[in-house]
Image (cartoon, rainbow, N blue to C red; front, side, top):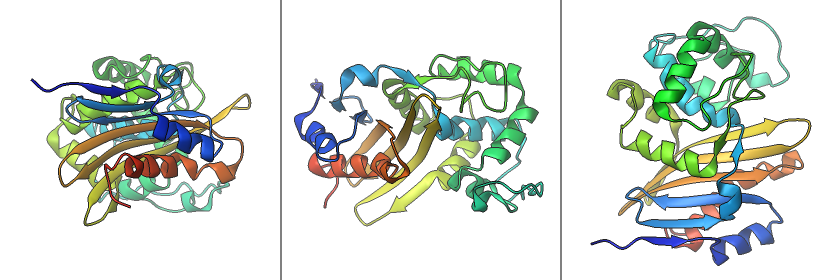
Length: 248
């Protein structure tokens, strides 16, 4: 029998958060659930808006509903200038995902519709399964909320293809979600940044495949300035290294 190892409030990872003066919660878990490192287990159970991390299930929903047929389809720019320059152009599914094109996903959302989203959220057991009054913003400023723990649960089902999506669509998602490849590991991930007037926080969620294991991760941190956005990914990678899950 394989023994379960859970390190709640891991001292090594907590020291990293202290070093960078960041408030947040992080879980790193093996795919088989036998090993888990946790920083701030209480916050890890608290739900937050998913922000752009919702683009992971949203991409699958969009593909499954055939709003977008595949990764080669061109999403035509509507000609409206937005504050973030990379959004102001035609896109493919890969660029929409990589630059977190809000207007693109809002167009997709209008075509999917609230009723379908509620169905999928229930089938996925995603967070609190709520949308809200506005179908184009419910993951940014609506009622949808998910915890670090629930992100890990969702990612495990995604990696194991235990979600109600075709293998082809999961393959397309993984193709555009691949963020980094080295001789030591391959990394699939998505950032998120919730910019509520009351509180700003960031996400970095995904999975990393090493030569001998698969590790799921979800990081949620307070954001006080744009300079702190880098800590979303940085703290994950440093934590993976300090636990000897990937090499320096």
